[in-house]
Image 1 (cartoon, rainbow, N blue to C red):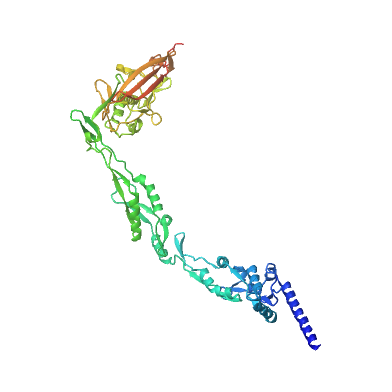
Image 2 (image 1 turned 30 degrees about the vertical axis):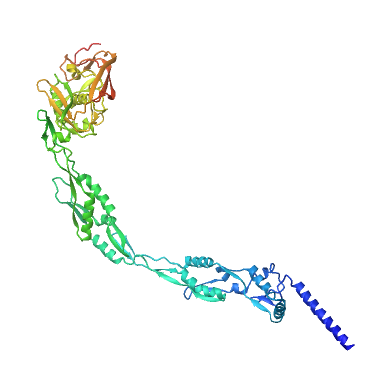
Length: 589
């Protein structure tokens, strides 16, 4: 009986044990066994897929790290601020495996050991070092200090030097190297930030300050090495001006002061026009028998300021401590010196002639024509350039030698200095017309002038000028220069313009003049002149009818093809006869 009870008791105990074990297994079939902790946090009984919230706050991830910047400044961060994060899925998966690995018998022993002794596992962590770097770079924005270079400034004429100051910079990589072991341990720690000194790029300004004082100690004198009579100068650049022409530069870590070439160049360019002397071309006559050029007036060499070379010399002088500098000038050769050879420059042929007559002209008009004609005798017009009559004519004044004579002014002729010059412009126009040159500006007279129609001159072939507004212009469109030669026939009172160049075979034909819109003058004008003898009368001007004259010019090339065709229209107003009379004369109604 005793044995049966014992056996029964044992069977009951075994059944209870097996039942308990089965109940235990059923309860923890999908849960972590009791006794398992993660960094001191009990996770027994948690499901691997549902225990993340229990692990959200762990002491190790909150351990403070203190970054020190010297004795008085620090920054506090947590590992979680530096890119450390808990991986709850992997951590709980490891905890779940405790007591389940190996054979069943070993598993039971492991489970009993867990219940008896427990097990504390470290968490599975992830680390992003770039987060740590970004954190340190944020600190660097507050800690970094840019170096200050040495400076040189001017207070009026006084140079002022400012000393350099080094900067500093957080060495992120070196600080990271110190930080990694502490992050692995996840324990509170104090880390000294690795700060580096950043030297300034420019360390010295005293030498530049001293040099600037010397440069501003007095004026800079500029002269011409070989001045001509009437030349301006010398020029003094005062310290107040010179200080604006200095520039401070950094060279090999040291400030240096020197000349601002651009500022000095600008100063010299303003002097340039006063020093400039235009070269003068020689004037020539063409010897047709010898086919050569004969100078009638010599050429002269011009001069211009060599700004760049002058700046070089000024800069070198200042560096050497000199205060007197000769400006550099260069010769400007004439385009056509008096040594020019006809064949070489291309003046070899008579290409056009213009002529007019001034028979019966009053003495003043006759004189003016002869004087004005000399202004154009021997002139050379380069290829491609525009000839301007007024440019070569110059001032028309009594001081220039011109007399008074009749000029066209409104309804009646008037007396004016230079009357008759239009005879010269008319003759030049005719030469340009027959030479086939493009005529870019030509003005006809307001009324017909009888002189221009003498000996077949033809109506509509005149050109008036009145400087500076009314001009005669044409373009030398040949590839060779144009030589203008003028001649006045003493007995014939004939004015001739001859154009010499290289004959390119062009030919000119004229159609017209076609006369239209003819109008008769009105009744005579009678005007009292108190200075005339009583009862006398004199004819001041003759009447002339008005009309429109149209001339067409056609220019052909050597092969007969049309190069150009242009039309010249002249609209002349009628002019009434005019009589002047003295007191007591009874003028007609």
